[in-house]
Length: 115
Image 1 (cartoon, rainbow, N blue to C red):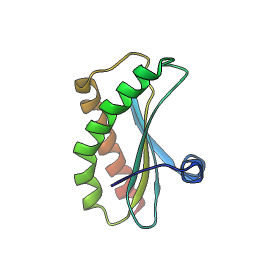
Image 2 (cartoon, one colour):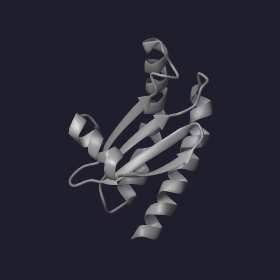
Image 3 (cartoon, rainbow, N blue to C red):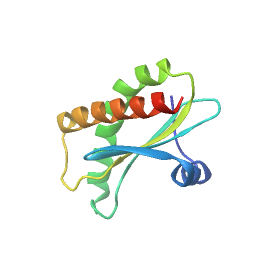
């Protein structure tokens, strides 16, 4: 799984992608071509200090890497994903695990209906 980067890829993801949510997380996804790509993002508007944003992104990456690899390996298609933290308070890792599991369930459910 690679990191999602590049302005064109991210713009295309937000223009044409679908999304699922489980507060305080939201995931935007789009079927990709050749490999799974994942990005994480935190609003600069909600968290003014870069230190806080970077901490949340680090926590998110840990949760995402642990749980998303097994899910994406089971799917036939490759995806570009962006996981957004939309909450207003500083989370700890336990507060991110449960919503992310719910997010994955909703993603699987939505994708199984589309196929």
